[in-house]
Image (cartoon, rainbow, N blue to C red; front, top):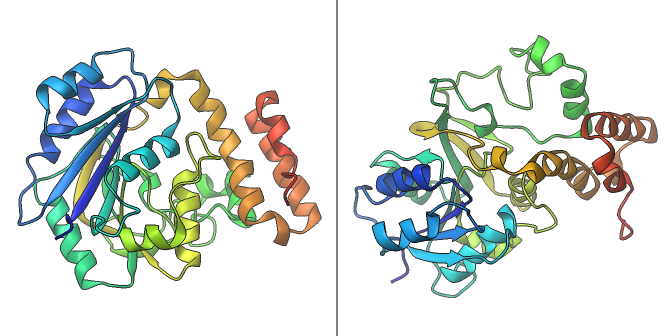
Length: 296
């Protein structure tokens, strides 16, 4: 019998938060089977030793270089056999700066079992101050939605179904909703869906890969659901703020996503507005990425 769930945690320099995350993962309740892999991207703290000593039941990949978030998750998925014939039924990308409630895995597995057209489900992610992590339910950053954000209209009119579409701030955060994307901090995916659309795109190094995955999953006909019945704590950016490259990659991810999914259908005047906005926001370091890829 295949496992119910594969849990992949990519970690960088957050040993104390990862310790708490793993404590909550292994406190999970319900009649479910799961396996956990921690992928460490060359942490300078005691992450590797801590996992080996405190959580020997977890599998561990200790990379010799920081391969980035998508590649690290792909390593973990491969180790847990997600591409194989006897793969776990569901796959969870989980950030090390999260804490999951005991019922989390069982409740979401039950929900997915009962809703066969759902390819991805994500929880209500709360920040330490109790506010909603807005990234946990999103619309795709289409040219239209991106322009609203660049112009600040999403901040001025957060309750507008038109201008507040990216973070869906017009919806009650306790309302179950079909969305375009949830966030990779907690993203439970039907493994058969992964086998259909492929794993994460390693063209992204950090940021954007979860949106790209969601876009490919939606385009394949699957539903993506924000389910607030499960609440997960998310410290947010605990790892990325320690790496100067992360800020550059935040803006670099935007043109990668745009050229992959929207460039061919975007009118030229809108295209140049988007390029100008990205150039101003991302700075000189991302300017080489603003040219269309050669293969387009």
